Length: 263
Image (cartoon, rainbow, N blue to C red):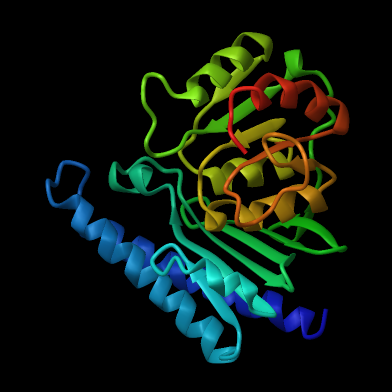
């Protein structure tokens, strides 16, 4: 990929600019503030604006797909940045310390660069196609766990979850069969945590490309396995995935969820 080092550097610069906006806005409201949702919208917009200004300022001919500008046609551009300026919005508004900035770069539809920045922990997860994954510059790998019964698994539910949701059925199918299940409220951090071995597996259904793009590359480049929820290749635009630390674990987990979740 041409200009690879520059892509990574500008990605880090943009992620830090977005994170700076989130931290600044975070101090302007409390979880008890009834108007907090309005502040979060402003925080989202401020973060995305800072990120977009840096990325497109450097590469004005690139596509840009962000949570606050969700035009999937941007993915058809030769190069496209896929950005979640605030992954974990509900956590953010409740002052629950689990949210992140997520940025990925696609070339001809293929993931090339991924970065997830946790501004509270100061953790920057990064990956480049064919070069591995890193946490604050140090190489990371997925865990060695190969059994579902020994696994710590995370799930991300869609925003319109109902009592009859197939996502809950899939959750109940998996929960008794693994060591424990977690729901952090940040799909991006779930994927980053699989990549560095804190989690062993993770699945999500009916979420958005900007939630998953960077994290999927992190998992793959750290030795993990990723697919769509019903098997087959993960596609950025689909909004569902199943990832695991090993092919063995992936093959054990996937059938537990695939029968309940649509493609």
